[in-house]
Image (cartoon, rainbow, N blue to C red; front, side):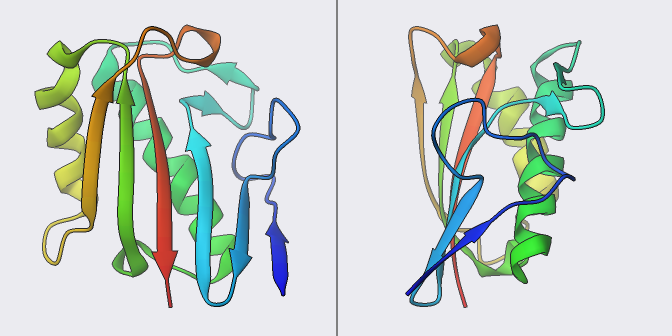
Length: 125
C-alpha cells in the first residue's frame, strides 16, 4: 500500500509527481530544489544558501511523513557544476553527522528553474 505525502511547508510539485511517496515503510522523497515554499520562488544566493533551502524542504517532507534525517538511508545529489561539491558537502554535514546515509553526487547539464543543486532522498523506518 502506498501513501502520498504532501505538505505546504515544502514547495508544491512543479509537474506530475508527488513530493514523496511512502510504500512498505520506505519513504521516497522527490528531488528537492531550493524553492522557498512561502514565495514559490527559487532562493537567491550561492550554492550554500540554495543547499540550506533544499534541506529545509526535505525536512518539511520528512516531518510530514513522520520521518527524520536519522531515517535517511540514501541521498542523491545533483549539482549544476562539480565545483559546488565542497560547499554542498559542508551543508550536508550539518544534517548528517553520524551514521551518514549512502550517497551519490553528479554534475548534470541543467536543473529545474536554473537551480544549482537538487537532492532526492530515501528514508526507511
